[in-house]
Image 1 (spheres, rainbow, N blue to C red):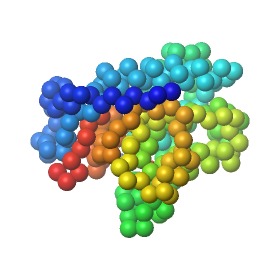
Image 2: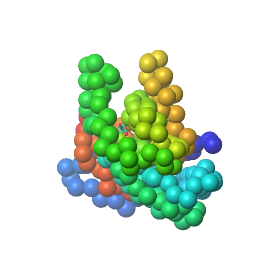
Image 3: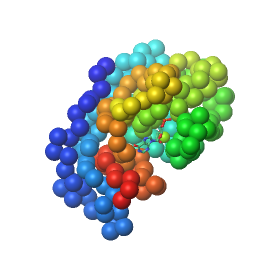
Image 4: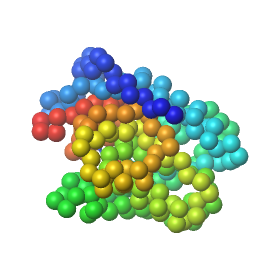
Length: 216
Ligand code: IMP
Ligand code: MG
């Protein structure tokens, strides 16, 4: 499966997409990278591809990695139910904030708080849904945990795959372990927000993906 590399060539402003932000957030958003319509189109394609990957299952447990994946997982679960006869369940999990990953000691200090119970997922077909693959720590950890808990199968679907400019070998190894089965879009190595992803807590509500000036 080839992920979409198509970043909106127009890279329009939010205003051109008819979206107004409060004055305090002006200057934060640079450009719209992936407009709402492109996101929704891709989600339908992902749901069709996923439906083919659960041929013998009656049900699937969608596990969004909160908070960033909440919007994507809601839309993807609905699209999957529309594209299949699967009984779609949800079991949410949360990870620690991104801030600690940026600490002086690097990604090693991060914690993934998995608030799922093994009994929620053991023996079941899982769909792990995350907003973005960056260093791969979150998904690598969750994959390990689900395997320990004896899930029946797991597919990992991420909306965005950040193409890191200069990844260290340790990061590359972690990303390889995270190994998403399906990717929505490849994006450049910039901070993005919208459609569930945040910039210092803001912008999660946007229906599109935008690039952010973190220094604004
Ligand atoms: P990883 O564990 O390093 O792959 O980090 C993935 C998590 O970091 C994602 O689930 C996001 O919550 C967060 N993250 C990474 N890059 C961005 C970004 O550009 N915008 C918003 N959140 C991000
Ligand atoms: Mg996240």
